[in-house]
Image 1 (cartoon, one colour):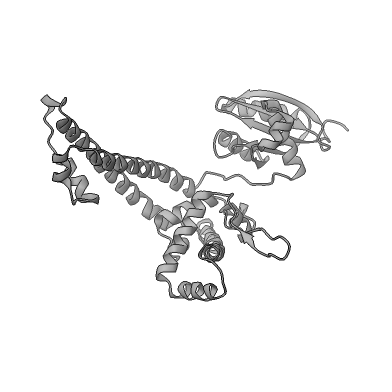
Image 2 (cartoon, rainbow, N blue to C red; image 1 turned 90 degrees about the horizontal axis):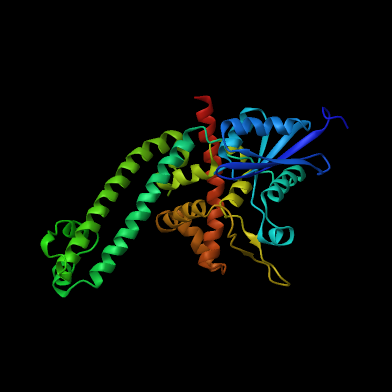
Length: 352
């Protein structure tokens, strides 16, 4: 077969500073492998190198949402089909070893065989902007939780006089009171004054984080509402939940071929767990756990406040289902609504 007629599939093992590429022919035979810098020039060199073996059909890239994002964008812009590759599991690595050439070859063969067929996110639209804002908010929320735990832990072991002074206060009132404490800087070797200074410092940090989270919410709320009005109007889907579901779907939700694909991505697709005369399904522990948590929030809200959902729960309880099984069913129904809402919102965006 001449080089011009040969169809080539590439595979790339991505890293922070370098990418290792491998090329295979239609039969999966290795044509070559080489390392390139993870730069714009390196992306061009990698694609040119693949094209020396023939016509590039598609390229499997590891980590298209992290180290491989730049390369995936360059390949897509150049008209090359990009496939998202999962890292090899432990069993494969134990049997075949681990190295950049091995991983790149495995990526190429997974893309060729169709074992890997996921379409990466484009990361060029409003959803990527929402994701970036949510990264900052999520970090602030995590830091606030850690600071609150420190505050309560320090208060538990504080000297008796301080504990009595702050007893009965909780939540925002406790933070506000601790922020008003005025430690004596000249006697910080004394446990009472040192603990007072520590409580005041932690409370000031919590106050600053509260302001940062509030600012993030002010930025996110209108962005999510403009991007996904249908999704935002769903019962139980506030800005944080809608933002997470948008981030999971990406700027190109057409990559989710069906509602079943979205359910699988969110970890809400039931997995068969039948044996003998027992016919049942179990929880799917894979997928995007943050998206699964967003579905969980919607389901909890509806179980508490939505009459239709409460009636469904009552009916299924009488049929012998446990609460976990009922919630699993409800998550699957919610995914159907989310999929329809996402398609409607992005259709409106594309026609606007």
